[in-house]
Length: 207
Image (tube, rainbow, N blue to C red; front, side, top):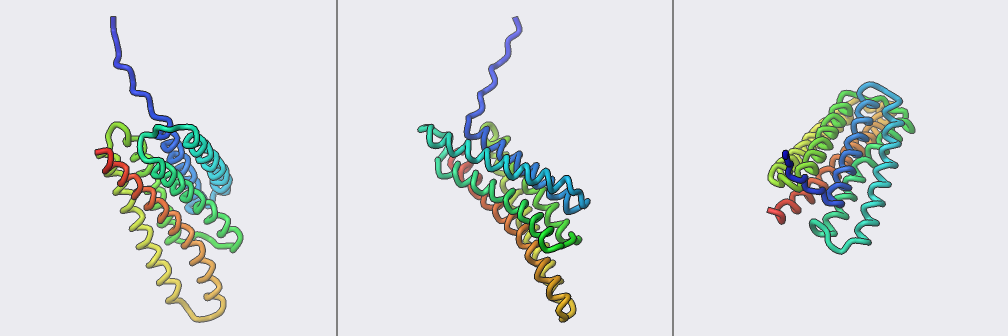
């Protein structure tokens, strides 16, 4: 009779964190569609993802209250979920700011969001590999951190370009609005970097 090795059951917290990372990636992908293509459906999808990510975090925190034994430090689980949630929160506020300030995406913003999407991809891959392939997960976490560095590099160049423009009131107003939007994407990347830092710490303890 043919037999198969039973698949190892995924830990509840690792599953919830993976699902949270996947929801963040979906949200950032929606932001990318909104920024790169002007797709209004991207903004609607992002709003939905932001709410669903919040619910996943609520479930995870409830599980933390009910569970004594966790796969790694409770504080790390809490913080990792917090930083993941912050990524999609800042993605959502990026759209809100663009609409409120009537800002059109430029090449710098599109590139920042593209790199942010890559960072979100790497965080998902890290969570998918965390339990069975922690060293591979660590490599993905490092790649997420590198993407954050790339976002910050584009952010600095974008702001420098804004400040090099004409010194009239119209340009100053454009500059202030664009910088505000750039800042939200930069903040999202910062939170992805913090999530990667937590993953790195967890993996070092595991290995």
